[in-house]
Amino acid sequence: MINNIFILLFLFLFLSCSTKEKKINDIVKTWSGKEITLPQYLNADSINQDSIWLQLVRKKFKILTIVDSNECTECRLKLFNWRLFIQEMDSLQADVSFLFIIYPNNKSFLTELKEKNKFQYPIFYDDKRQTMKINNFPQHPLFKTFLLDKNNKVLLIGDPSNKPPLWNLYKQIITEKLEPRSPH
Image (cartoon, rainbow, N blue to C red; front, side, top):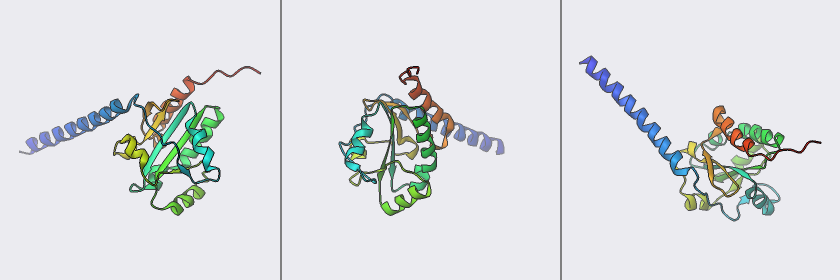
């Protein structure tokens, strides 16, 4: 009897892991190469908001992160990690923008969070959730970060903010396509 329970438990764990892996693979296959439609304009939390969005969406690469206020905003954003990623891309002189789109409930909390993490990069507010409605993003928060090319096609999906190997993959894809620098 105990052996039968053990075998059933093993099969359940094996099948659930297999099912989870299949779901992940299905999400990646569905989104790979898919074009994401970005709104023409979103409000930013910074001063020159009219031109910031347009400047950022025209970059060769975009790292798009969608955060729903129903999720733990602080857990999902990991602003300290993103600040380091942005600095790293700046040092590579890569033509990359970081688009943080938030469906906010509490904008003052977001301001405090930015100050706490010394995060200067703009965050965009999508009060009407138009980005989500247009694109029908996956429900799981780990699949709401995308590396996009200049045409907004998905090159990579997944949140690298707490997964160094995934961040390395983001960097690898971007740096492989960097324009060679001219010698001085």
